[in-house]
Structures are given as structure tokens and as C-alpha cells.
Length: 328
Image (cartoon, rainbow, N blue to C red; front, top):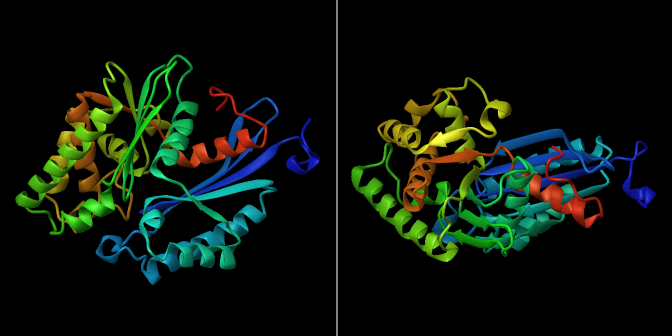
């Protein structure tokens, strides 16, 4: 039996999840039926660059914190109108790294009411896989999940009958752009340095994960979904055309070549490129190409579902209403 406090008048559990990332913040409000179906009610994402300048001194900038707080204040009002009975907010790499994280989290709670939990790379990968799995067809077994973030990249190898293997590397699009690809456009030496760094990090990940064989690689989060949109030259973000799109290594190489020769301003307006990603998308393309080459993936399956959905799915399970994988 469900406690009446957890259900609205129609027997539905409405939940909210917030993901505070290094580059992007995301909101998902969804309802969970008694049959275990997850239905999205509202989703938003904002490129807020919380991790801007973080690698200089491990301190979140006041302007970056204010951008996030202002957005969370707005989302608090949205949640307040949605009959939400449970919420969870998580922070990832930027807040993990920041020396002033306690000050930031206290400000968020004071000004917005969100109690934010910092999750480690392994927990981030676990919840990301929950989201990925929910969006896959029931026949898919072994999966290598890939999440290229602003400050780190998460790998999770999920194979039936085995404990999932998780690996997180300190390699993200904001970090790589600010520490290596500092010219606009990046120089050939910077690109070579980035490639070598990516090769080392992805080789380390491969050794940690072991032989993944013919496992399907499923990529999620903004870099990969943006590249899927660019490969199709979509005039706007269309989740139905991005989810389950097969992005080939050849397409990634072509996009990388085009992006690296353009200055940031020349990337603006490219079909499929989300505004605000102009300076970091080249770094993301380099990371994706390097990963695919290290693991010998000729293509990856793109998922529009990831950490944000995994946050809500995890909360639903903890509240006693697990969502069936094929119910979306």
C-alpha cells in the first residue's frame, strides 16, 4: 500500500530531479504510475558553466554560483506548481572539486530550499546507467555507458550476471578547453596535446573495464546528443530524432575536422549546435573520437536519457515504486 502522502489524487507519484553539472544544469519533473510507467511532465536544461575557471584555484566563481542559484530559484517555483511529492538534487564534478563547495551548498539551501547531495563519479555513473537502460529496448544486454561531462567523463560497463564496472576520469569539455585548447581556434600543438591526454585517459579506462567485446556503446549527455544533432543537421533539438540515433566514428571525425578549423564565433549557427557550446564542442568531439578509437567502436548509440532520468528513477525505487525498464 502507498502512503497517501506519497500520492496525488489520481494515485500518481510526481517526482523532481535536479542535476547540477560543471557545464549544464538540468531539471526533470515526471510522474510514476502504479503500473510503473515514467511520464515526463517537464524538462529543462541550462548551460550555466558552474565550473568556469575552476581549474585555476579550485574555487567556484561568485558569478557562476549566482547563475546556478538564480536558475534553481526559478525551478523551485516550477516544482511548487507541479504537485511534486518527492525531489532530489545532486551535484557532480565541479562541486566535488571546489574548495568553497560548503558555502555554495549552504547558499543554495538558504535561497532555494534545495538540499543538494554531492555524488561521486561512480554513483554518477550508476544513476546515468539507470537512465540509459530505461531508454533501451528490452533485448539489449551488455552496455558500455559513456557520459562526457564538463569536468569528467564516466564509463560504466553493465553486463548481465556481473557487477557493473565503473570508471571516472578527470577529463571533461570545460576542463580540456580551459587547460589545453586555450587558443581560438586551437593550435595544432594544443590538439596534439589533447589527443595524447585523451589517449592516456581512455586507455586507463579500457584497462579498468576489461574486455568489453562486442558490447554496445551508448552515449548520453549534452556533448554526444549535440553531435548527433549536428550529424543530422537538425535546425533545433529534436529528442525523437536524437534518441537511439547511431553516430558513426566517420561522422565524428568529419565533425571534429570542421570544428577544429573554426573559431568559436564561426561555429555559431551551425545546424544542431546548441547555443553556449561553441567553445567546448571541439573538446567534446576530441574526447568522443579518442574514446571510440581506443575501444574500437565504429559507432555509438545515442541516448537522450541519462543522469537526470536516473536521478528520478533511483528516487522512485527508494520510495517503493520502481519503474519498469520498458515503461517509457
